[in-house]
Length: 629
Image (cartoon, rainbow, N blue to C red; front, side):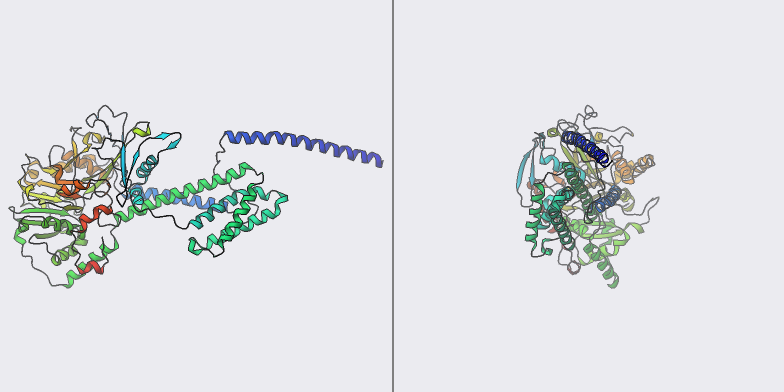
């Protein structure tokens, strides 16, 4: 019986061995097959997978949670960016033919422009340039010529990536290139890289019973790196013996690489880290763009301090009688109108204009502002008179205007328009970005506010004057209402949303900044009434107020603009890094349209000097409020 029992047990063991051998043969066939299939498919990451680590220090589950929270925050940042600024109408399709600007009707289906939110800016390509070389200038004036060769051999031209960044993230990319800093905290970044690699190899090494010592060493080094990184984020925070820890970690990783490991597991881990890094980089880029845009459109603390200090000083001081009050309504004098809520900007416009005037005593400036800045603006010009020119500050909220729908101050609206060609060849693709500065609703109140005047010159507060503007009053405007510099880089027909009424599709767009207004002709033609009619007709379609105002303004003035010579004004100093220096010197006025205003730290450095030299820096309130444009 015992012998029989022993024989039965031997047969069972034999059967178990046979089954085990068969299982090993099957596995030895399937594993290489799966590996080959993985290579064939390129080991595409299946996405974020929750990993159950064999040790408590693996933190991929926490990474997943932080990733989702960052994605939610990224979505909120996108929504805020979308609502932060006026955008062009959703219906507007802008077409650009780089070969012939007049052939807009034949390329509508092939090339379409992209109306972009003002939070986004691309490198502007001057219309006069026909070569495919772009001159990229740094802060020190260095230039690098890059040919747009597209994709060759699977490598994307770096310039294409840069242009994509600027289209997606706006002028932040331009500012970042100008203010790029050298790499810091290289040791901390190296520690993070080693930590990522060690985490990728650890699960495979931990499954090898014969490598228990290596598993303990890897776990100990990973925990040590995590502890160091949790206590400091800069090289200065690292302990003095960190170089030895680098050597230990590198030795452990090198030894782990010498063992055959599960390639799929390592690939999955590294791809998870890559995906996470891409998401974090995208999130931080969007967050940086939002903060950049916030800095652009928010009044700096120093300017707010200046306004408050001047307001307090106004009420503390004795009232000052205005000696030149009779000049404010004298139609024989030369009248300038500035719509602004910025004290320094208005001061620079007036100073630069009066400084270059042949006879400043004939110049009268009217500053139209809101109630919040009214008293500060008055006190500033009481303290800082400008030669013999007369200056009047008006509070739009206190003016008595008949049939006025609004008493809110509206500054000239700026719209960014980006054009891209529809060619599949990256080398043929071109990006052109322009800022269109157009009249706001406050401009249509000017004939009522200055009912005794017949002709005025309207200056935006981001303008610097370099020549005498007296000859503007001698122009024969041929019955037109608005004298302005036209920009033929963008034509009226390219704004596809303008489908109401007949208009010349080949007409060039005009820019605010420097505008000669014939108020008598304005009243005769009923320009304000025409604008209100267009505005009401276009309202109710779901478009923003700014987008409707843009369309209504362009249609209102389509046949009423007298083209000034290009030398009267050069625009783009608030977004275009590549304006020729000689062009700037020859221009009568400089227009800083765009995001990078000269009074902001984000302003383009090489253009700031033209603005600074017209600022009166001797006022004590500038130093008290730390105003240093």
